[in-house]
Image (cartoon, rainbow, N blue to C red):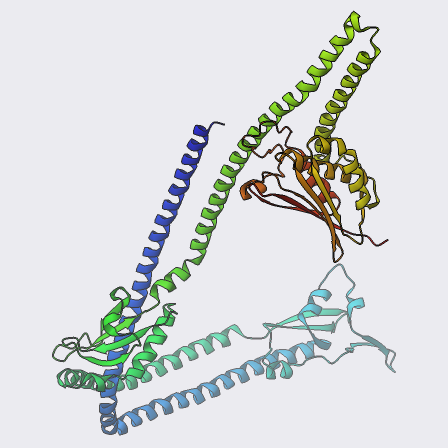
Length: 609
């Protein structure tokens, strides 16, 4: 992607993010305005209710004084009428109970009469429950089998007597009446006097004519009671009308009396009323208040910690205490909410939190997207550099091999064994060099795919260092390198892969040679720190900046070398070093300064031998 395209995408995404933020701000401000209006309405409702209660309390204070006088004047009349009504109600209640008892007695007499008729007409009738009646009434069942107990006996004269004897005590009419559980129909089971077979009998518990008589009697009594009670209440209403006129006189007196505000209502009462009404309206934030004269700037009561002149006018709400007063000063109640804005915002914390969360999420996504694009662009550039470097690195040995091969084809050198041997050595060396390049690239690919097979074993780091420096002696001599070994570790044993550890050392020493000027200086140190073995590879080369040290372990990244154009490589060496060190449970750090050199510090856990 070109830089212009990246800038266009960044600009569009920034514009979209700004638009979302502006819309969120607009919605939040509108929501805050709406909640502020609702809060003001609720406060005004509470204040109006407080003002109404203050006026009623003030009126009651005057009425209480007059009520005592009115009570003394009308006490005897009121008590007489009240006692008369109470006595009348008690008399009616007593008469009603006696009448109801008489009706029950008549019902019971009717029921006893019918019961006697049944007992004279049937043999040993027994009262049964409704459930038993339904069971015995089943025509598909044998009623004999369903009876509690059927007794058959033979008398002296040879006749057979059949009678029913219940297994359990059965209710009688008196029991049903006393417990007020008399059903609509009383059920019997008895033996017929003709064939002595069981019969089911149903007896209505009430007589229709008798119940009609009771209903008419009840209606008449209630009508007489209502007429008499209405007449008594009519006398009381006349007295209440006289009291109503008295209240109108008291209201006129209240309007004309010049009573100070401090005597009409107390500060403590106002505070109590405000607390109650605010809770009723769902307002729980702290408030302060003061009372002033409505027509003068004079404070009567004050319960506020903030100076009144410093209070925010937007958070002050007020109402007239005695709005019906025409002559006297009605007084003004001021209520101040110092934390009104905070309280409204706290009610919106869910909306605010969700909006901020979504905006942050969009910002994170936006940032990550731009970061990914930039990172991919850098990776693409590094891959292009890698391909170019790889082409040049592979081109040189290939060209050398081609020239040597053409030399071998020359017939004139067929008998010159020394020349043939030299050309063959050149081809071999270049093939080895080409194979090393290919192996290095393949190793990185294997490590990324976790396909590298490690052969972990106990290895002496000092021996590995000696072997690597020995194998690189020709390369070191070629650059006239000053190599210094300070192997001070008392325990140099590691559990690692010897081959890959050798490659790590080779890469670090090779980098130190490449990025040093004439006559490179390289120092290798080892030391123990607690249970760790620390390896340091130090050079006094060209060094790198702190910004470059953050990226030197990235794939394909190569440190710019300024005027040194002969430094070759794929940018894979240090990435390989870092991956191998991690696989061996180690860590790697780098310290560097421009023109002062670079230090690579590797830390491994040691093993006890």
